[in-house]
Length: 267
Image (cartoon, rainbow, N blue to C red):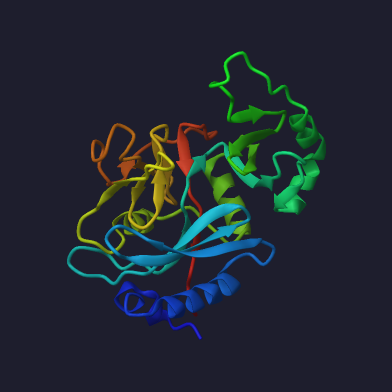
């Protein structure tokens, strides 16, 4: 049985790993879209020793951010799940396919509408004069294919406004993060933020698992008048962690990225 108090940092840190996992699995049953494919569940711990849990949902990695209570240094934020990686704002993640057969690994329902484009992708030329310049992204009429080592991630290119993006996320039970949620994920209930570099992936990390790369300039928030700069865009702490005012284009471009949040709210 989930109790709201257990999902906040003050009690979450007191639970055993088995108790945390049990609550996390209950959250997935209650707050994740019933048609989403739930993949591997694993613990996630940062170098400060804080632990939460992560899961692959339809091929995207999400992790649980426990709620934080209000005090002199932070506002109250309810618990939520957030995608570890941000994606370009003019793309929508469809799922993953096998790099050899093209068979859907996740989200078969969405991918079946693009069988011909996937088939054409499998027939693409793979030879190059420079063996060290193998492409990692390919574009078809409607899709972008991204090599993610063992799988190919498939994205649908979009020409939409932020309101359209949010409407799509809400249909799946999600949303963009609020400014307070983004801050909570970046600080992970600490009084100061800690920067971390993942030597294996080349990504930079904040909090428990927010991943960044240097190409990301800024992320979208629920408030269309604000964006969240990527603090690693010009090196750690060159931009800062506070959201800034911005006037978004009518049609979102790849200059902006977004993460998906799944709110964990008990009635």
